[in-house]
Length: 289
Image (cartoon, rainbow, N blue to C red; front, side, top):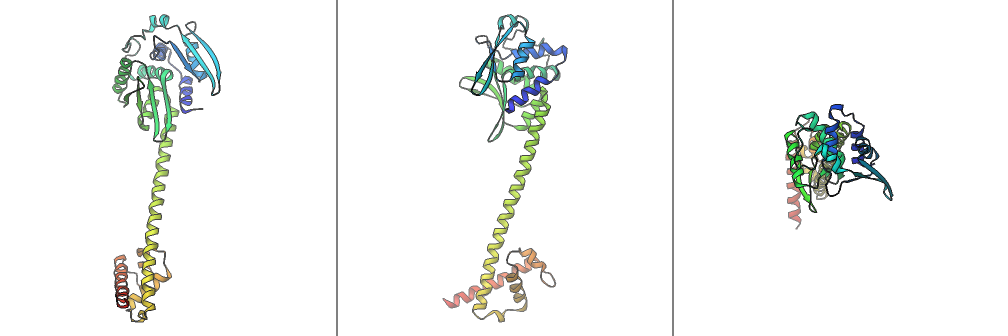
């Protein structure tokens, strides 16, 4: 099943307080268009919401498609509008007073009717697609009143609200009663963030290892060149000690190399000795030109 299906099934299973059933019904009807009072869904639980709550005022037709079963719910919009007044472009405050509880129940109905959540390359995408610019503005303001964030846009002439921020989406789903789906989204975000941090750390460590190996190879090349020129025995004891330790330990960092000296020295001490060896090797190369 899709993420939207999971969320809507969870919402349909949630209990609506009897006193707020009309608010929930109003949310289900709010996105319905006067010119096309038909709701199509492939989610059985959503179809049952309409047929059970609006019994006698809706009819459902089942169609089989390649993608699965589709339910086409025809709504007696004129009759139901007499009670819910959902043709009104504003929000009927007799059903939605603006407090958290009834607003959440209302938006639950709206999401079941016209909402979706999908997973895209950039992350999650929540959308509420209403076919009325006025109703979109009313929903936009209502959601902002509750302290949540959402954006407005238009696609092929159809106005809609959307969010691509996983935290905002999680907050919205929690607010409308889909707590389980909300937690799942946040858990996945945490997991992806954790995995991303590990990958960055691994890549960083791999890059550092690569630099260490490359630098070590150049240092050993200088040491070998000095030996080839017959100048190794002329090195001071501290440089001979460094040369011996580096050749024996080509894959360790300067900090690790410093600990092998007896007694141990600092990283800067190792680096200073390496510079002296490099200069000796460069001078020998210059002489041979």
